[in-house]
Amino acid sequence: MTAPTGAVLPGTAPGESGPTEAEWAAAVAAVRQVPAGGRVLLVCHVNPDGDALGSMLGFAQGLRRLGVDLLQATFPGPFDLPDPLRGLPGEEMLVPATEAYPDPDLMICFDAASASRLGELVDRLDTAGAALVLDHHASNTRFGGLHLVDPQAAATSVVAEELLDRLGVPLDAGIAECLYVALTTDTGSFRFEATTPAVHQMAARLLATGIRPGDISRRIFDHRPFGAVRLFGEVLGRARLEPAAAGGRGLVWTYATQDDLVRHGQRPYVLEALIDSVRCTAEADVSCVVKQVSAHEWAVSLRSKGAVDVSRVAVALGGGGHRFAAGFTGRGSADEVMDGIRGQLDDALVGSEDQV
Image 1 (cartoon, one colour):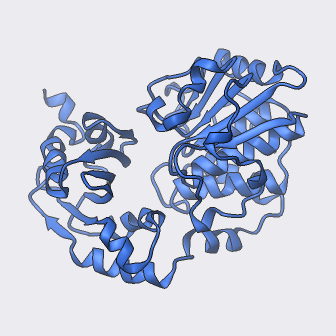
Image 2: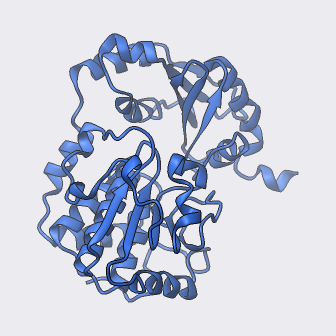
């Protein structure tokens, strides 16, 4: 049974900034006011991860149960999914960005902290009849017209599930599988700091529909081509530890190039899990993986064990995220990107804002 709407669940802090009752009401109204025959476009961020795709497809199935027939789900960039995320319920609603409605009656964005994460689909914010944003990033820029942004939520799927509940959509196995993938992805299989009693209560509701958590977890977390295993070994072999960085809390980092991917015959998505192998380094609070996107562009993943607020580093460098997990796009060489990160670490020490 879901929690009463608007209730503060155990493990969530009252008074923390999250959606107001007025914002929830406006979001519900926006969905319910889609006219008969109206078109709804669901969009998540470029290179979708489990939370982005799972939240979007789970919600898409809920809209279908509400009778929304003209419905598309999409994301910017190449129309290609990581192998572990293929076959999710609702996948048949996905269309390439080039085929997305140009002027939908309602646009709903999932897990995107800024409009730039929508790539070539950003123009729909202007052409849509209404634009609703569901997100959990503290760095969200409040783009779009309507917002359900909860920085205290462990995943965007938490926000999506509550909106479905307020819309009167009951969970079924298809919706639950998508939301469970989303929830487990962003909590690291319930290992990260955002894993509260409320998170486990949500997981229990999803499991009660009959989905099989073991099968899902094996597909999402324990499915890696042998070439990727070899690639990880090579990239981890060049990892560097800098004990004096971050005010003596320590930094560990490594990088992966496009040549690495080609040499091992792998697609870029396999590198997303690399940060988990780096962040376990005992001597470092901050971990970083720098992944080459083009000749002079790098996707940067940052993690912290608590002494450093890596979202402050990422925001200062044009990205965003959370205190414990964040990212940005860097330019130049890998060493130049790392120089920029080092220059921000001391200012991002937790408590440093009180010393200014």
